[in-house]
Length: 174
Figure (cartoon, rainbow, N blue to C red):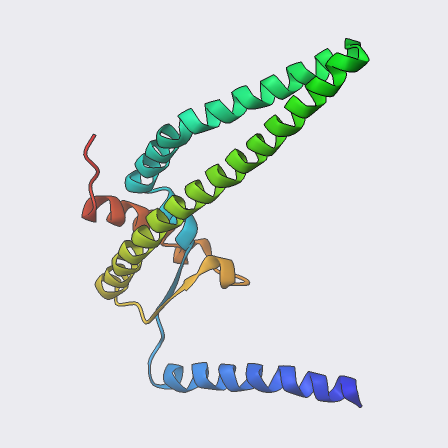
């Protein structure tokens, strides 16, 4: 009985959704397209430049972290051949550097993620406007993200057009 009621809960929204789609389609043919929103956005010149700038901005901190990791490896190697008195000192230094590396790594990751999210959010707003304009130009009734679509004919895919239109609308200075 529980399984049956679970199916009813699942089937009812599907039937309702398909009925809603059928109503507008009865009077006119709906024009639909798909776009891989994330792919279209990340392929834009603006996002590629932003990614390169982000990498360059945080490269010194990453290099500092890499250097700290190398120092930790050096301490580990020294520990293997150290006497008892030296080993205790090396372990303390290693623990201190390990905590420092952990903190720096977490800070770096948080800072990169924060800036990346800000860049993507701004780009996503611009891409939504570009996709809406494409829909208007092509007389489309609906554009669906391909990642939420089970099947779409390749001819319906506007991903490359969206990237091209974004690049035209938001040119990047060299």
